[in-house]
Length: 375
Ligand SMILES: O=P(O)(O)OC[C@H]1O[C@H](O[C@H]2O[C@H](CO)[C@@H](O)[C@H](O)[C@H]2O)[C@H](O)[C@@H](O)[C@@H]1O
Image (cartoon, rainbow, N blue to C red; front, side, top):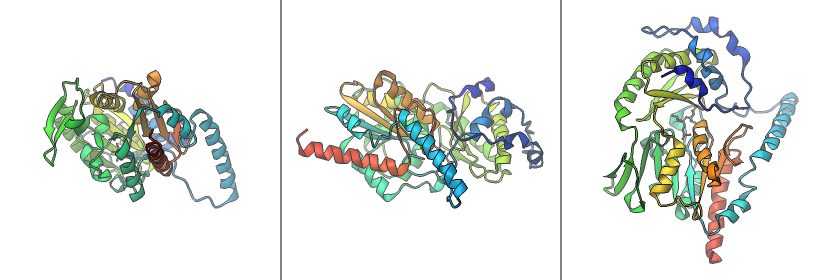
């Protein structure tokens, strides 16, 4: 794999200003412990754009605003946000448009997990959704087919969401499970009939199955090469693996990037994508969250745009593939969750997880009203 092509990954122009301190990382970084077998060169990741992508990978968390100077800055930020909303209107304020368009159609809901159903937190193992959010998701699933499409492993995201009535797609859509009874057609060689833990018949779609041993090996190597970098955390998602740097000192980001880069060099069949303060290593196959959305709609017999209205809510770069699919042919609504302006293929926006919850509750309320009026 030509690693320079990683530079061309769809990195969103996040509004977060690029911190220029990056130019001065050299001295501090070189004094850090360097993994033994493969000395990091710290050259490649500067030229291939990884560092820029890392710098812009997540908006800063809101600070407590205490002094006037910061409040003024905050006014500017709000102004920029409201201007941005002219292009990406609030899904809450646009609810009547969605409702009009959904008339006599079946709404299908797709939800990302981190940053959409649970707020972004420092520890990925503590990204819990609130009781209220779970009840809102349960509410929509009562009326509309609802799928969770996450970068996490399917088992992990199921454990976090805990609702058996949903469809689940883990590892960025590379691990999909849904009940056989809901299937209309499956036109995919990688889909097999299986049974779940409760013995129910399910369809299991795992287009990257052959990569499991490779991902395990890369995971172990990444754990080893990053073990001396304080704050680095590596997760194994079965079909992909993630290296988190949210808790790593920013001066050390070039080192973490170079370590991942050096490991990836030996795996031309793997590629890298950028998430929110996370480097994600995954199989180089033509599959992403957008393809997972198309696959689920087709399998459930919901691909005719005259009959259904898909709504996808997500906050991350990997969700852009799904937004793109819905934008093409004006199939449905992509809704970006963001508290800062950023370019997106989504049509609408929500500011944070609280607004996501409000939106889901509005859908339920609307559906219940429609039912009582016989529509
Ligand atoms: O597709 P998603 O469901 O949004 O999963 C994407 C990644 O989410 C998790 O990381 C992110 O959330 C963490 C918890 O808030 C945060 O600490 C981290 O910085 C974020 O990148 C998850 O841990 C990753 O493995 C997923 O790929």
